[in-house]
Image 1 (cartoon, rainbow, N blue to C red):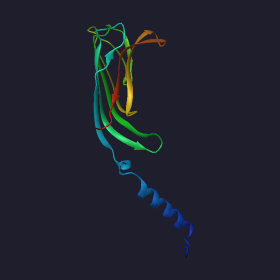
Image 2 (cartoon, helix red, strand yellow):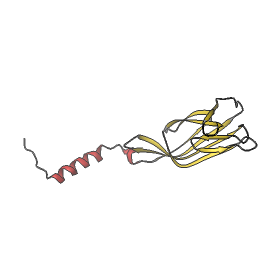
Image 3 (spheres, rainbow, N blue to C red):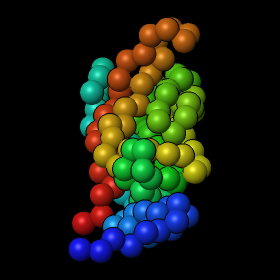
Image 4 (cartoon, rainbow, N blue to C red):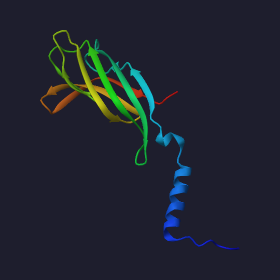
Length: 140
């Protein structure tokens, strides 16, 4: 059996070629995804309702696998007027009609994550969950 002697650079090139050939096709792919969630009421605000929408890309990285990158919008109504609410998309203050919207652009999220809308009870200390649901943006 004869062995081919490769210079050091040849070994490196061979390793790179093998790694690139074994990389899944999706690794370079950015698949567009969208998902909508209707969270359920989990608190003393039984009339609270909302819609959570994600629009963006399913991306791959070697550190954490698949993740989402895109825009997340949380729209709520039936809330306590003028109360402060926190969401994965940001913080908002409900208007006099109990409606509020939080948006984030180009955020990074897990492919499957819990979205909870919290009402602030005391300034930066205590929060009560108001709406909750699991957003699943895995392409079907």
